Length: 566
Image (cartoon, rainbow, N blue to C red):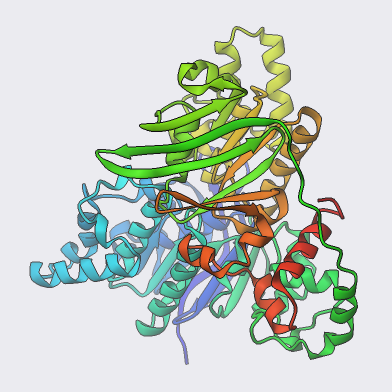
């Protein structure tokens, strides 16, 4: 009989800086060699629960505890964080907070050094771990200079050899490209199966996590456990919609076709679920398809011609050429390290091209200052910690307005407007340091929206954001797009975002622009998917299962998800 490893009994926790408890009456038992997904929207309490498991509560985050939390039989309030670290290995959501080495190799080797592994054996293990996550060529690199996705890979590699019973992954997919996200889930599953670990995954990207089997899903909301059930049971319930979690795309498509999915259909895996009951509905659904017409944008806002750029003689952008029309919504996608973020910095004027030309609103970009470009192009960086400078949320959002000499009354009005839109108004007087990584992301987006730019460039806007909150932000951007003809560029790994909110995808791979086309065409091109480290969507898999054109199904799905608008 399996033994309990994690036991919460009538557990309540209140942070020292808060007046209300964050966790309420938690009763939860997780047994040895179980794989459990803790699911919930931002602010649901799932990360706080994770901090209780790995010992950061009460040792790093002080507060009031009621009830019991036992990890491997150890009552956490009576243990040290060192004792708990022997039981629980953690990959944090914020990779910067986890690095301890001065190089990638040193960081991966940290747990091995603590176990006094011989150097010769250690070097082999470090190289093997780095190779598994695709970072073998970066062992001498400084972790803080890596891209967000590369940092996440290093964090994953660092726990591969940890000699602990429990592995805890706090949003491990947040910054990874689609193919690497798939690999990460496979790697976690291998660690679970081969090393008999108990695995806890904290995520809101449900479909991606379900790429490999999960024993249980714990759904949280407002610090309480709402449900504890199997994936199949959760997928056929109404709980995902009620609590702001995105359901798998293939299930949404089946619902559009009028299919009522049951637990007995095995809905947690599109490749194996029973579709035989839905033949009539799917045939009728296919017959309603009308191909969309590609939008045309006559006015060129940004013209990029044969642009190249190198860091220390290493070319990271090679002969990039494309146009961006005024009012377009474009996804810039591709694998980690493909040059997407470098291009974003270039467009904002932080770095300038070595070769080629860029025109912005018919002006020569090279003659424009960073201030001039900044007034037109709002850039929201991937890592919110690199943008935040003020202590209080409302001061951060109003900082740029204050620097532009706006009156206090004007600033208050504009700041209140965007804070309400970004679901941050209730926190306006909170310290920035007191909110989660995902909430910090929303603060930086709010600060940029306050400037009302012509172009807004968002680098991984959905990383760390749950479905409900990022839908609110992106719906607001859609409103701005309609009212102001705003041009929106998303640098993203989130294929769901690309499908639902953009008209076109520009695909980067190894510093080159390898494709520029409608999203549904990009996501059904096997060559582009392989070269750019994308992955086939579950819609593609569903189309293959029912013998339908993937392009047609994805095109039809996009139209229906947008309420018939293209």
